[in-house]
View 1: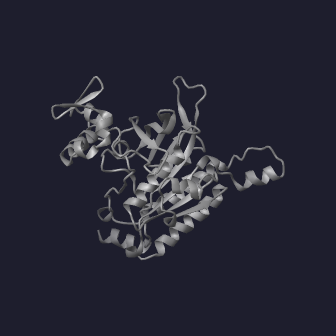
View 2: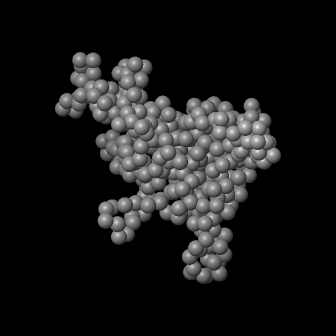
View 3: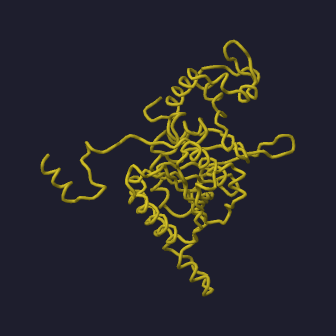
Length: 335
């Protein structure tokens, strides 16, 4: 034991600890949706990892940016002294868009990045500056990269300027290196990173299969990978949001290949907090769905009426029961 303590002392960096001294308390960031929290953490009161990388992947126009902004809004609302660094590769995030989502503009910094090298350099510098602050002065912080697929490399830009039509074969290695360096530092700083990315259909697969672009770097570095697909939700003829199917392609916190449907509004409401809980309760036998109405406390009520006044039906006792069902359905080690 004395020898091990001597090793820790001599190596003397922030990543070397006796196993007994490791803090394995999982930290979560509430996403604003109870059912999505359950999907990614196994608890409706959990969320995405609070110090690891979460990938949100999907085809074009599946709502990846809006989904990420909804999580950011809830993070800032839940942490009045917190802030967010938003690495934008598409020049898609502007003041009016952020304001329409109800995001506090004074607590979000938009950092435009073009290349993998630029993102790595700026993200690492930001984490290092954060870690230099005394622990009691570090406020809750979140990073977002939107999106990985749009990042170029310095070589690609040079080749394009020189009119060379040659693919940069080093891009995937640069991405892998960037996330390899970031993963440890984000864990040490307790900073969550959400990365959006595009997906493509795998050609030649026996069953329809989707894969993320950018090589294996993000796939290995991410603690959780969520694939999104959507359909538009209308109020009359007006499109007011998306009903999004979210599926765990990879998860270190919950069961893989599980899916839920979440509701995402196009305004400051963001993710509907209670949407999906009725279906969860039905799965666990908490209530029944009879001809489109739910039998709750001897009454038959339409879902729309329940979601309009959720506090009346989702009492603290009911929420605890739903969390038990969520753990049984989505947590590792549960049947």
